[in-house]
Image (tube, rainbow, N blue to C red; front, side, top):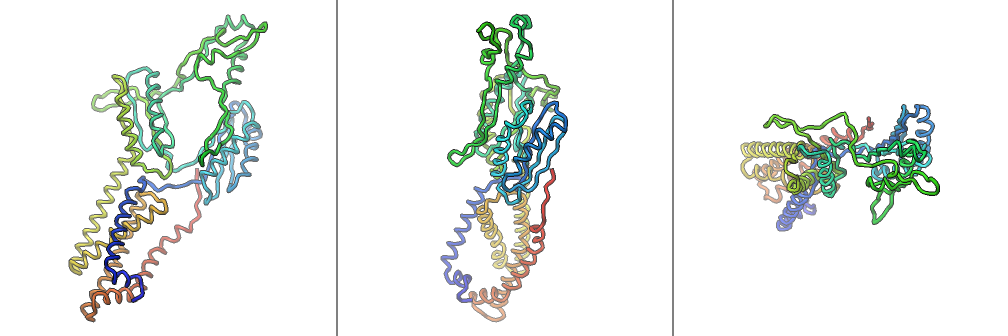
Length: 463
């Protein structure tokens, strides 16, 4: 035992104290930098490709869309299984990757293959949409703009807030709900249309063929991948009015010659309102949900989002306000606060029990081992990129029994060696560890063995 690491630390008390302080500082720092979320990140290696083909029969969808895409997707690396479903007007293909595959890289390859295959699909089909399946794909905080203003005003301020929230580090997307789709409305003058010998079909074909957004794949720049697309979209009514529809006597016929274009909101069958219990009234509302990227700090992001909204609130016109209607961070804070309170209560009960059984010195020695070991564990969790969630915290609480049992056995061994065998303190500690290390390690390993089957299970994802 004299040459063991334990003996080294016992003979060099200053080094031991410095090492403990380094562990404490490293543990607190790692705890402050560790992302906080409600549930541990679950990576589901699945991507779904959906392609609408309006008006097509299931057979046509299968032949013209599904089969074409499946031939391309089966060549992607790390593909485990491909399943498809072709229904009237819609092709849905589910691609499952190997469990050890890089899901971000796999989804990027999936998008690239789908984009490359787009020219081979029917022109009447809409662009395929690739969706990454995520277990935590929900808004971490939702803001609601309320007021009695026109929809144009709601749209204006919702877009401004969307841009600002998307600038927060870690935000995956910002989703606006409650606003009908804004579109450009073409009002054709039938007399002018007939005067030029044109039909509604001519106008529709000219607009649709010049108003496209075609994906061309991803571009790697400065170690970041960017989705690239070929855009030929009209951004304003004036630009659309300048579109040449046809040619008559060598002169182009512009859309403005036969129609007027204006912004309008599409018809909707739903209406979003916010009920206020204090005033007992309903107000028109638009909700804005913020979604986070995997592994990001939820608490930090919601705090920054609230700060951005407070600054934005000052820009709202009179009669318009913004409130928080859902906040995941509040629930997480309550859960973690409850767990921390329970942990401290447990430590206090253990310390009192040890005091009554072994005395004040043994109680302090055993109880102090708990936070020190926890902080060292947090350093390890931060090193492997883990997040601080209810599962990791519950695991720490679950390990209390093992930590305390080990401390009690070692301390009781030291106490017996010093009082019964009259050994010096250092010799008593070394002898106690030498006597009990094998059974203590064996006992701890049996506890770990109970959880080993969980790591050997085969997982099946359902969607």
